[in-house]
Structures are given as structure tokens and as C-alpha cells.
Length: 610
Image (cartoon, rainbow, N blue to C red; front, top):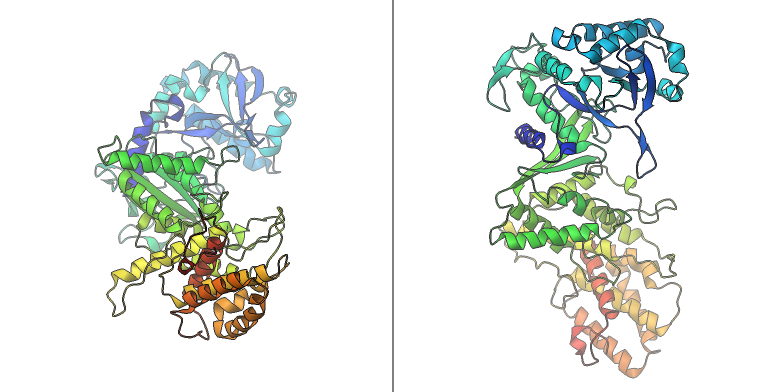
């Protein structure tokens, strides 16, 4: 189904209204060509043109041209038609292997001479053959761009002086290329993608752009050992999964297009290179990349705007939107040596996709400060559970398991009842325990349970609760956690978190200006082994209450009574999920203390100071 969806996307992009976005026809590919040899009809060199320009990141990026599809490169010698590296095109040695370079160049010239008459008689091909006959290396060495091209053994091609297109893009050459494309010895079989009898592609083109895979590219469909081969398909490679030459070209071209550097339909989530596309053209084709990707510095609210636009479209779509029935595809790819593994794949209508994204942010919803984002990006959520370093003050994501980010995105698209990976909750709770109070750049103390970390814990716990509620048990279903303080939540761990926050608040008001509170010394122990800590803290709070006014002390006493009303005793140990409940209780109660109230008439039983 994945290859079929990519094949359909390829054919849609071939007819794209924007010429710059059109994908090349079968037999051609889009390729960065850094250097172009511009020659006259007589084969004389005019210039060695450097097509590279500086992008937004101040890096040189070569111009992209449509060229004949490249051959599968191995350790042997195989020349591309009318474009290749400097050694192949010019026969100039750059690596100290002159004999091999001579063979490469000879094969490059031979591939041009083997073209059918319709192409051989073209003025551009004739000019290239004349260029080789009167090749002058000294003339090339005088070109300004020569040193850089030689140093990198750069890819290059030819252009006839006065033309805009390369020689390989001239109509007669393209027609000849399309007529000779494919393996003449290819076997006929039913294509698994199209269902039609057609010549089968033995070796599929490489997929490039997958993070962590080989720079030369890797394969999704590949067989190179007997253990992987079907009965009767020994040493016949691609015939074990028959895909026609046209379909193999289509899906590889489409996937390489989605994975290209400047693509707005891909994001990198850990080790999962994730791409998105739709069955039909839609303004929301890149919405997932905007929502889950890292927002650009010049537009930090881009993700929030994308979420709001999607939710608005879903709302209007209930009355019949333009994207009604349009399916959206999400594909996660991960490196696996010379191959690419499928991390996840989802295909959903826009309405269902939007509902799952909406549920994701509903699970993350949490009472927050004025400067905390309503829709935190995945990068921020991952950073919240990481150890911060001097080079990564917001959290070093590289310290997390590389497959965590992809597993989170997979859970989002899989549905609201699919739990988030347990490693995410483990990391969040672990950071809460290990975090030490420290001064931020603004002079404020850091928290054990900041907003983003609390949001992660709530989302993970609520999904676990939702999943367990589907499975019949003798126990009553647990109530999901609210974004704000829940006075009716009976969870002992949640109440102990509230209790710890209240004891810390009493200490802060009794001794203003403290550099460190009980949080800095006792949070880790209180959240994991409550019985060893709370008996001491409850005894010490009496001395703090004596320093407060009678009314304030009485208010805190009543609040403590309300919190402890359903707590029978303090357990010796809290399991990890309960440590998450403790963190939520602590965060909610702290936020409640610092939330501005419209008046002073709020009843004490609501846990709000008057």
C-alpha cells in the first residue's frame, strides 16, 4: 500500500500546476549539478560554470536539473549518461588511480556514442563528441571554478552555448533516453504496485535523505542473500518482490522528492525521517510538518497557527469541506545499514487526522503561565525530559533514545487509545526527581516540574488510563487528570504531590527570601519513598505555621486537612506511574497558589488562599 500511495503521488506531481514542483518523467531524475561545461557547437570550451548559490543558512547549494536517471553505483565501473563526476566526464584523476579513471572516462564516452541516431545527430551531442576529440586540460585549469571542482570530484554536465537547458535536456536526447530506458533482459511479471504485466525492475533506485542511512542512499526493496529470496528466485534480486520498472521509478522519485533538503513535507523526529502527503492537492499537506517540526526562529508561532488552521478546517469540514475524503499519508523511515526500515505508516482522512492531532493537544493541555505555548512543539516536549547542558540549556535531545520521537508521532496518529511510549513517561518522572534548583537567566528558580514536563506526564498517564478503561477489570475506572487542580481526584499519589507543594508554600511564606526550599532537598525522596519524608515534613511545618498570622495559619491547616482527608497512610514506595501522579499534584497545587483570583471570596475548601 505504501508503494501504491507513493506511485499515485508521483503521477499527481507530474501534472503539478507549478513547473518547479513537477517530477521528471520515467527515465529522468532531478539532480544537483554544481558545475556545467558550457561549450560551442564546435566543441570549444566557453566556461566552467559554477551553479551553486548561497541559501538561507549561508551554505552553497547547487542548481537542480532534470537529467537521465543515474545507474546503480557499485564497486565496479558504471557511467551515467551525459552527467557524472569529474573523473568520469573528463578522465582527470583526483584520487591517485589513473588506470581506473581512464576506464571510467572511456565508459562515459561509450555510453554517449551508443545513443540511437535521433540523439547522435543532435547538435548538442555532436558538440560534446567534438569537445572530447580536442580536449584541452590546460584550458580547463585556467577556469576560476576548476580548483573547487577538482578538489571535490564534483558532478558536472554539458550545455550548448546559448541554450538554457543542458544537452541532456534537449528534446531529441530526452526522447532517445525514454526509448532506451530499462533493462532489455528484464523478465515480465505482474507488478505488485499496478497489477499489470510489465518488465520487472531488478535493482531499485536508492532513497536518499534518510537521516543516518548511507550518504549514497539506501533501499526499501532489496534482496542480496539466499535467506531473503523466494523459492525459485535465487539470485534474481528484485524479482522476489516484482515491481515494474515504471512503478519503481515512480515511488523512488516521489520519495526522494519528499525527502529533499528544502521539502516542507518532512520532519526529522529522532532517527525517524517522517514525510507527509495527500491523495489530492491540499493546503494541509505540510500541516503535520509545521505542527510537529521545530518552528523557524523568524516565525515562532508558525506551529500554533498551523494547529488552529487545521482545527478550523475540521470544524468547517463537518458541514462538507473541500478536503472531504482526501486521505493523508504519514510515513516514518529509519536507517538500517544499507536498507531503510519502515518505522510507521498511517493513512487517514483529514477529519480523522485532525481529530487525532486535537486529542494529542487535549492530552497535553495544562494550566500554564503567560509565556508558555498553548501547543508545544515536539522538540520542546522532548527537551523538557532531557538533562540540560552548557551547550544545550533547554535539554540535550541526543541523550534520549533515538527511536523515542518517532514512537511518539506514531502514537499520535495511531489513535487516542494508543499509549505514548513508556520511555517518555520514565524520562519525565526521572528528570523531576533528579532536577536540582538552579537560577535561570532571568534570575528565577527552575522547577522540578515545569509546564512542558507536567504536560508530558499528564498526557502519558491519561492515555494509560484510557487504554486500561477499555480492558474489563474488577476495579472502577480511574478518572483522567484535568488540566488544572482537581479537588475531587482521590489518588493518594496526586494528593501527596499537593501536600508537598503546600508544605513548601508554608515554608516560603514563613521564611521569605529562602535560596532553597524543601523541594531542593526532599522532592526526590518524597515522590518515591513518601513514608521516609512526610512524617518529618509534617512535624517541621508546625514551627513554620507559628511564624504566620493566625488567619493565614488557620487557612493552611484547613487546606492540609482537605488534602489529607482521603490519604490513609504514606506508602513505603511509589511506582513510577504514581510518581507521575505525584508530580501532577505538585504542579497543579503550585499553579493554584500563584493564580490570580477575581476576588477574595473563594472558599477555603477549594484550596485557594484568601
